[in-house]
Length: 489
Image (tube, rainbow, N blue to C red; front, side, top):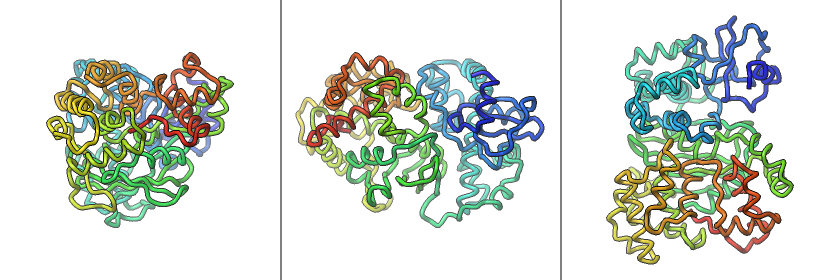
């Protein structure tokens, strides 16, 4: 897009571009999302920025009406596999807050100076500024949804000092932390966790996503409560500073899903939110996916029938890897039972049970040397599972936000018992690659047959083949309701 086409998107208040770019108005000193309902500014007064951090660095403060700091993330970072895309996924997960720019650069294989230069060139801000913008958003959530002391919020959001926290909030929101808290509309925290609204763009096929998660919910770490339409997905989380329990509702409002997080350490808030966003694929661009599929006479009707179908990711990446191996060549139900047995035998108990949630998933370290005799599966698969967990624990296989997808897939395929299906499935869900096709998957083959297509047609579905896989799985289920596609984890 050029600036003129960006301005046309602003004039039409096109929500498809929220999070893709930001609009700053010279005369007011405010930056907005493209869909802001305020009066459209004159073209001569408008500048455009590729990130909220860039707008903030240019001296603009966030609009109080459209809250541009709370938009869905750009789907571009999921598509891109280069250093900038990987860095953005890591920053969102809190790597800079935990390990600094040096830690981010080490994960990327570049020097800190190179990372600074690449991010500034593309996003108008370096890693520190991007992380700072994210910390400010976390602080605003805590100020407006909890009664925690301001000092505690400063450190929970990731700021190094109260002074830095105060200066940042004043710069971005043109208010002091106390003023920002005083104008809140949300109720104070009631002891049941931090309430959130998880934003997404475009239509969201919540029923299908909750169906997908419900079929795979593992006892002890996951549960689905309520009836279809009002269900709530709940799960435990093992986080950098402690544990947590997350709850996401099926029924939200226009452009968001309701959520609640209970954390033993509020420093994990940013990381926990990003894990939920990946699990529910909330940063996807359903408009781009629909546009690509609409041109295909066979896949197009499936996409039109289920607008906003997502490709769910994973909240715990090593967990998904283990579950993928457990589910090799067996049904979804059998894989879920095996995973529940594993959790009961090796999972770490929560500080206190929370409903049906009692544990967090076992760590890779714990499983690498475990006998696994509780699991009713072939010895060869036990060896595969231990080898995978050892590789994850040692860092031979890296599954984390921003990991090099090609390198991770190659490392997985080098392990005994890991074939193309398992590696591709992990690339799609654990690493969030939107362009994975699984031609050897039974459900995909059934789906292709149901719509009269073949594997060769998948080339026209790039770069969104992961979404095509989910449409094909749904088509297979509709055509063969008694067949459970081999998508175990």
